[in-house]
Length: 184
Image (cartoon, rainbow, N blue to C red; front, side, top):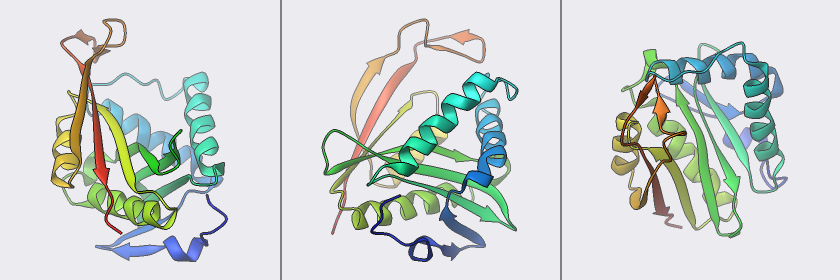
């Protein structure tokens, strides 16, 4: 996280959701959240795959250590139920939202919207003027949420067949890229 932000500046509570910065001690709980989120959509993540887990946390730790990167988690009763991050891009005015995850039991209750709003607020503080994000066309709930929150679809690319296997199926999957201009 940027040295310009203090932890207490990003701790907020809305609708019983407490949003705070990710801590290394959150690792196991975040990994479980990631696995549950993918599994609920038919994805195949082996929760015991240590190599996949290492790559996942290498990425989160890299983002968290960037000057203009941040990883946030949302908790209810001290249980992590949602998360998201902003990573730096080659354009210093553009941040990329990654790793949006919400526990299946807490979906459609506005918690993912709250974590994205918190990421947007922090993006403004970090000096970003625009946010981008990517997802796949089969993540219907996520795509609807991003559009509802003002993200505009700017690019759609077919996924190679080897990558387009999800839940044991090979379909017409596409990578979708969104952007949002941040108001000051």
